[in-house]
Length: 472
Ligand SMILES: [Fe+2]
Ligand SMILES: [Fe+2]
Image 1 (spheres, protein in one colour):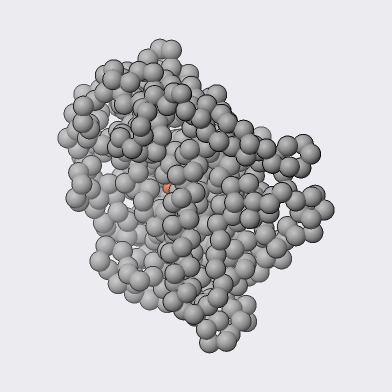
Image 2 (cartoon, rainbow, N blue to C red):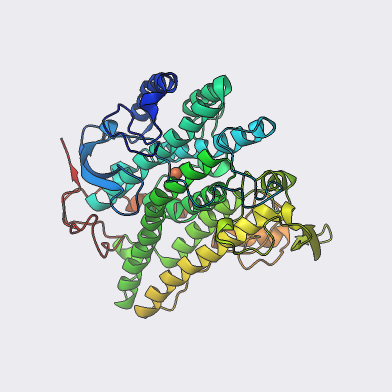
């Protein structure tokens, strides 16, 4: 079952060769995917040779292979992680029952919805980032962008495989619709809001990969616990790739902060050198962190409760046995919600209904760790400025804080106070124009734009100066 067939037209470890019907269906979808890639994927770079890693196995060591490849020739494959442990459902109402290898009829719609929602984000981010190659700060970064893009493409393949294999005609239609919805399309947009916002600059890109790809990590991690075994194992493998995307973001933001702090240490205003002031970075972080928190959905959600009860979507690291009660019954989750009169009131909700809130808490903890790493570097460079993660209440469009004027510290304001101060907290048009004016492509090996520090190390043991992209 899990032997990797690398010779097949679609590399896979799901035994595609033995399932001719499925193979034909996926081979029919493949040209549509390639059309989409050429039309809405990275613009202009499809004939160039990019030094990319390609997944070739699912084992712990050596799962990827590095080489020069033209992006449209990338070997998008279908890989499931090895089956784990005892193959029992480990949370919810079906606790202890064997995992499902087929879709249980009564969960079919919900499961399809979960897969479609996840799947839709993958091509969406490629569309959002399609013009960034034109302003890459270095060849190293250009390569990183394309690495992320091709892997998001592979994640789409992963979800489309599930739809084609387990959901019959509906699944095939959903797989097609994934290529028809487009990021920001007024008539047929992507499902989730953060995936319809354009990523116009590399500052946005690094914030997006830090905060939005990290939401992806938590959604995938919750699905990786699923009682539906093919979904669990698909998402487990996706997480291996996802780690690089988040690293790209964390390092990218860190390198921008580092560059500005270096200038400030010498008494130079970053703006005078076309670098990014730290308070401006804070506003971009506020924007993308809050938009990404919205992706977790409402804190109080019967939908989330049902997905948990059914054993389809677990808590973060549920399988590691870190929760006392794998059924999550009889416990409450405390929430503070704004009342109409402008005060905050305490409210308790049954734990199962708070699954989104719990996942968001794990995410916030993770983000807090990233922010303190950035701050340690600022500290080392002797700069006083500290980055802060905005409160969960700030600038939200989903959940109990949606549409209410909270400061980044989480204080409830009046509308007037919010209007007066919002440009301190979120990027203004002027900010965006300035950042855009800094974005100019640097394509010479070993050279880098003035607004970002070079990385500590290159990729695959290669130095920063390596020719990561060879133009045709
Ligand atoms: Fe992804
Ligand atoms: Fe990603």
